[in-house]
Image (tube, rainbow, N blue to C red):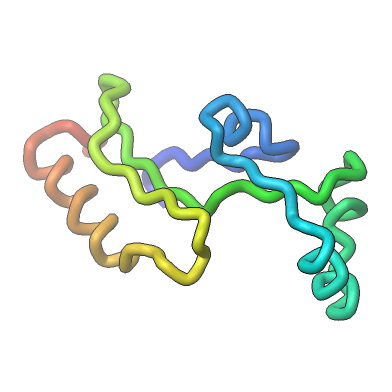
Length: 96
């Protein structure tokens, strides 16, 4: 990909922006039934996940678009993010 991406191991950036939640006990049980040990996967013993989110930030550090919703079933279409990025490229805000 020709643009920078952030991978937030440990959820440090997400936590700084209030975008982290801890799975409740009933969901922990469901995860474990599917063989998903989030505490082990996180490597820190926590059952925390980031809120699903996408941010488009231009080269000047201005946030141009945000899509963040704790309900993982409600997400904007990736095509919308591509449109925003294309608009930035057209306006000269994105890297050529």
